[in-house]
Length: 166
Image 1 (cartoon, rainbow, N blue to C red):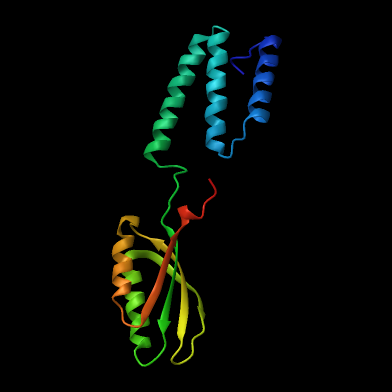
Image 2: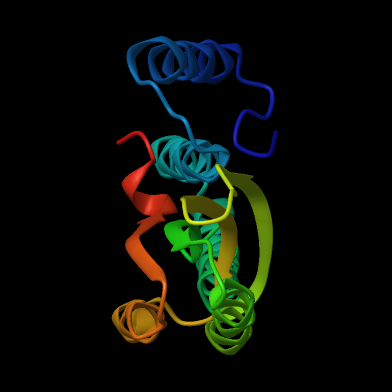
């Protein structure tokens, strides 16, 4: 409003610019939309020679951007995963399940058993877990530990970033 002031021409210019941004670009992130509108206002302030508003607006935007960066606001946390493995049911199956949960406790913030399919004696049961990984750099180590457990095989870990639409 400080940029527009009493100028009807500037108000129509702002409306035109907002229309171009709104209909020509697909912005999926509200954070991107805020930065585009902010830069638009600073540009209009410079164009209408209201440099004091432009300088204050730029300083404020820089402070907000630094804060958002330091706070990791809106940052993607790719530590969400889906673990599937087969466990051969038999005499050693119960300790194997406990070994798996011990490993998951070590490497995951949280985990939840989603499903167990085909759990009959002598057959392979397929376990599915939803995981919240502590450090994604240690995924290989976790898989190696799971592979060492007797009766556990066909291990598959899918991380969230592999499922996201780009």
